[in-house]
Image (cartoon, rainbow, N blue to C red; front, side):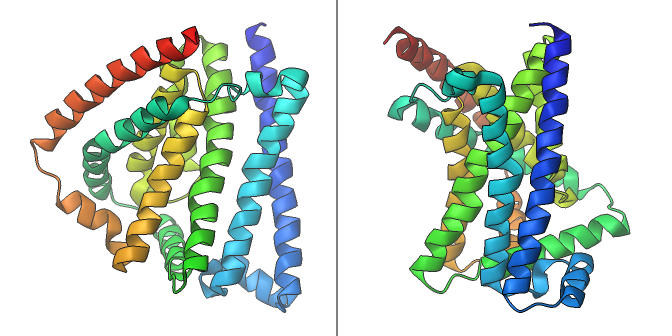
Length: 294
């Protein structure tokens, strides 16, 4: 395939994502109308954010968003371009095994000090008023849905905050976007960081822009080293899920979660983090070779 073919695939992906966004808008509107909201209420919500909605409705809207904006376009892309080799084309055909899965999770955890360092750098960057507005709306939404009074709500939150984003976002940003950008520019490293940048930017949460981009790069490297999309999917779901679990168990205020993590950062954690990441990286390559041979 030529660079032109990969460029066309990226354009098609953008089209699928726009279509998914339009479907999400339609189904979200119908869901809000079914819940008893008027058109005026929906228009007001579009300006003020989802913080004023009931937690149950907010969870339903988030689930709709993950399914229609990420998972559905990703699946359609795979069916269109890979057809009968759908799972192979998306690098989902081989189970990673428990060793490679755990190594991926440990690599992500080992990177936390570097992610926290990027959070401290991000804090030093002043944000414009419009960015502060997005941050406030996102925080209100998270506070509403992360109030978990029953195990059922906790499990549902794991689905919409960990499992669905882990599948959908990795499918789009690593399995398709990173892969096609890498083939287009013939530079896997550039593709990892471009996809990580877009991954962070699309969340519209600028207080955590650099940490989220760093996490996206970690997931991108896991995909590049293993050639298996299940590894970053599992690591992504774990990263989100462990935060939900900690908040459920401890009752921690979500607004203090990142701050408390960064306050615990010590200088010696950075070289230790890099050393552990290197050792895990070597183990990942070794286990990938074993997986390929079997």
